[in-house]
Length: 420
Figure 1: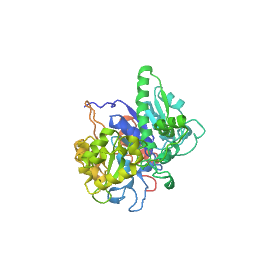
Figure 2: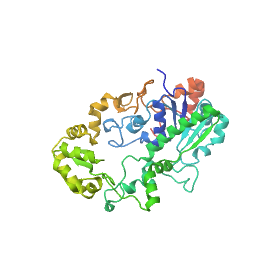
Figure 3: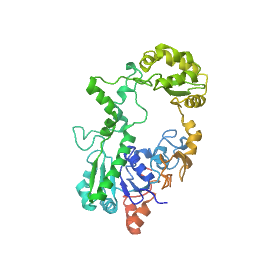
Figure 4: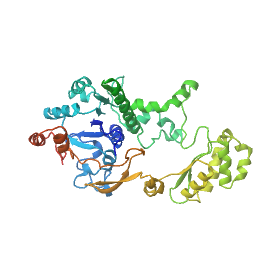
């Protein structure tokens, strides 16, 4: 079956999460992603070359003999990609890189600003190699502006974008992170979308495109309603925790079992009446002090307590079924075990089998969408370090076996990292 992007080749220099997530989305749609690492500068998500036992994200907590091939973070982000090793600071590495650029559609990097330029591959130089190349440069703060030379990762974008200033449970506890470093996947999603738009532009015009993508800009773009609220009222959003600024009741409630929870959100008067009937508290629906959202918000603390008394003796999945049947937004707070066991996720193949030579069979998150005319699945596991050197260098670029052997002898390429 033809894949949506199977005629697109991307040279991927990006690392950690933001860039690799963007190229993962493209790989899942069929794009040929050639991920490049250097033997002395692996993608940090591969983990340490010699990690201590019990550390890192390894199957059964065991780093094994080749931990750089076993890290779960890396293996979940790089499925459906090719992987090669190439030192771009070495003259031979630069030559091979030029050959790859000449036959590729996109190059993406998320180094600190200027790193690729210092290696001799400015946007202007890349255009000389491939006149219609799409280049994505995504340093943390973009390539212009007062902060352009600052260093940052997704872990700090929530603070810089103001996300954490509104997520805490109280002023005394201080700002609380979301837990996912949201700047990374958001920027990766923006990168994938921008690349597709640039390829459409190139198809119409035949021209190259430079995409200057900032993690900070991507994060700020999600904060529109709160920035607008400040313009209109001069007020910063307050920390809300699990509550909503106007809907009530809303929150997470304890359920039967240890550390088991269910999320319930009432967003209208009709949902409120349905809730009171579903939990057997119809008299609350007739109480004037809960008649509308503003009154329920004023009395939310006592409502949360009453609902919590009802939920704590019941299973979170049974609660969900009961309330969803009554048209009330409700969901169990899932653990990792719940996700693996859930029949809905299983029916949609959310978790797919990945048979990796170094980790054996694992269930990893699959493709997050289903397309009617193409496949949407894990086609092959994340690449072992330098796994596709021979294929990319020999069959794709056309280098001789002697030249490839020389790359290995010179330390320009290989399959084991420095220090192994």
